[in-house]
Length: 209
Figure 1 (cartoon, rainbow, N blue to C red):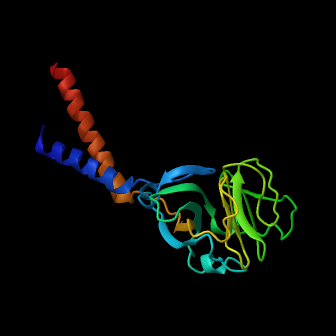
Figure 2: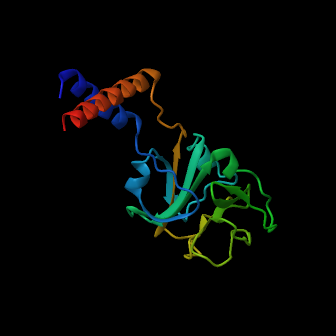
Figure 3: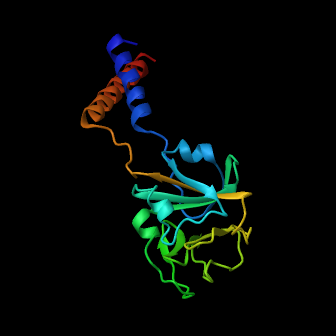
């Protein structure tokens, strides 16, 4: 392989490696996800506490710590390397006020049904599911998570309920800016030159054969 073509091919690999960073983009409610999958996919932990700890009357303990435009709510056994349940979405959308009452109203965000109200509750359920917000969602199911937004902690992670005073389970929040790695114009040009060079090599080898 000519030196110039070899250099172009190596440059092409380097550009793809740097620009195509692995991103974890969960859609809907996800179960049993490794923490390493989340943190390796562009998310940074911004808040954690046992389910016994209140997140504040307006979830301010979480929202003051998690300020980027994408947020993920998750729950796990305290200290576990596996998240039992998670869902993520635009921060403003998942904190849209759906009313401090058992009105059944949810806000569909990124494949999950979210609800939020100050001095009431904050949580999600699987896409299309109905919720019974009293104050947290009490409907049966293993793809539901709910935290109180008053002086209690968190009610449920999946089918495990009555966790308001539990230190055996914890809520963990992650955040990210939502920016996706996009190659710079110069990188695109370099990729193009690499592809051209590799195409020339293939053509020459085909003719030789």
